[in-house]
Image (tube, rainbow, N blue to C red; front, side, top):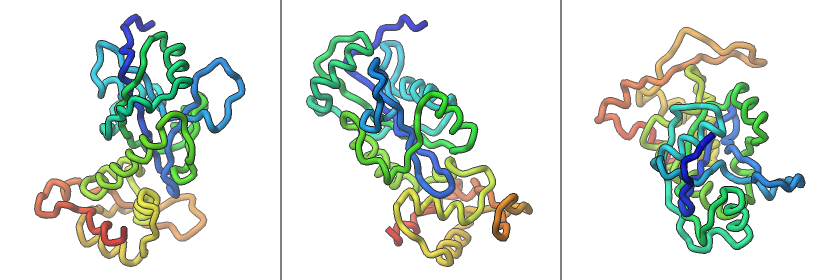
Length: 247
């Protein structure tokens, strides 16, 4: 289907973060190999060698769409991983065989993406043989993918303090508790509920709706939406940096 030549030395790897309401998760795929004996140690980040006719962002978007079936998601470049020995001899042999290339090293460019983790997306990724794992439970990936994951999480933690990207992992309408749980999951901390509500409302980021939660086994909570106009007022920036006091 694709006759475009593959670049033999540059790849992209994508850290795809999703939030399930309680935990920050990352999408992992299994190494494509003829060996049927797959196990957890062969999990990796979604990635690909770039094509000679595409840019790095285009390659990352291609990987992201292939992994999730979605287009137009938030995607940001993190770091370049260029250690000449980041891929050992065995991994390099697999890369060359799978992609039909010949190279002595591979430089990869890291990206992270944010998705709304819902039942539809979970079903799509499951059919593709991919798995969602809690970030805190991932301790081994092939090659240097643990470094790429750790780096992406660090960048996400910085970005989330200065922008509205956190809301890209939440439903359009959400509760204050869902928002707090997301921040707790991203930073791996516990936040005092009363203080969080006081501060989040004081900066004018949330817009109240007339809707309440449905189908819950507790008292339904009010639903809110993001007040995007608040991010347009420079005098209020950074809006979320109050979280730094809890880190």
